Image (cartoon, rainbow, N blue to C red):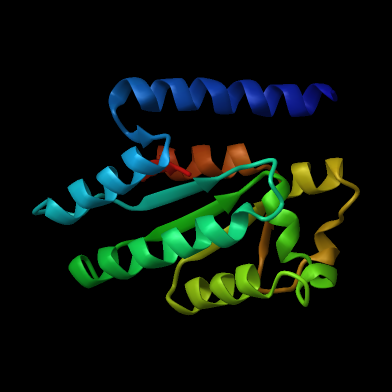
Length: 165
């Protein structure tokens, strides 16, 4: 594994552990749903919410984006100005490549719907490169971040609540 990849993974692990210790990360479906419910019950919105999607399953993006789509509707109904972002940095992100759009209609349709609802959507350029996929292989409306974990860290540093799917 390249040294740069190891550095990003170590930083992400450290960030995840620190967030977990502070109660700012929710790392499974039940706790993710519970976190959204707690946010909805809150009197004040957080600075923002970052959904972290990572899986080895290339079909997982359908499920993850469907959940995020449902949750963002509820969150925006409660807090209309709430910033929401999604970072995909596992094999599921490959569903958003231009060549796979016709095969992965549901994931791409959900991604476009989220973008239309002012949800920022990022994929990991480092993971894509490790799978032989260049940033140019994603449509223009998908932001290819140099590193998914670094992008997540950027959002957490800005005070966003991290919810891992």
